[in-house]
Image (cartoon, rainbow, N blue to C red; front, side, top):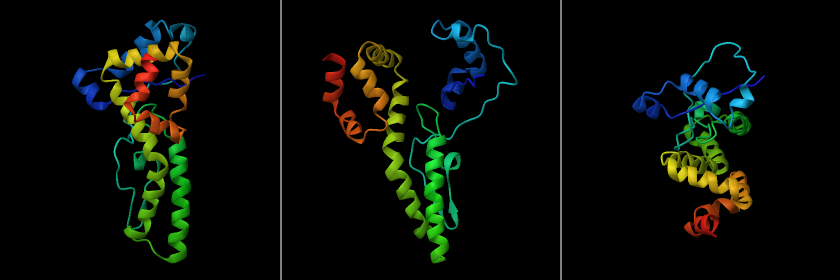
Length: 185
């Protein structure tokens, strides 16, 4: 069994009048890269869809007697749509800050704002990078160029797959010279 999904920004779905369920089924049926994987598959249950709160901008995550985690905190990766690991990290930090709030009997916005700092110090660079990759999809020819280059260049492919975990690599990704070397070197 597999859980298969597709995603698009709500504004893109609206502006281009895309039926995402239909588009996903057509891709599964016709896309040469994936159709063979599903040739003997049967749909079980309904195809459901919902909007995902993406981590594409910083939001306030805490307030007087409130700490938001996971989807409530808009911690879903804007490029991959993955959110479980970010939700788990938020939950862990929320538990620590809550423990400290209980021990000090301080549930104020000011005290709980330390949670925001913990979360954004750990996750913001990754979310920002994913948001940049998501925006790259607005330029299909450039996106396809990068993907095709990655498919032919092992170093570039490894770089893309490691960029979320490697802090030093993220710093390189901010420099135009890095892209020049990767794409034309």
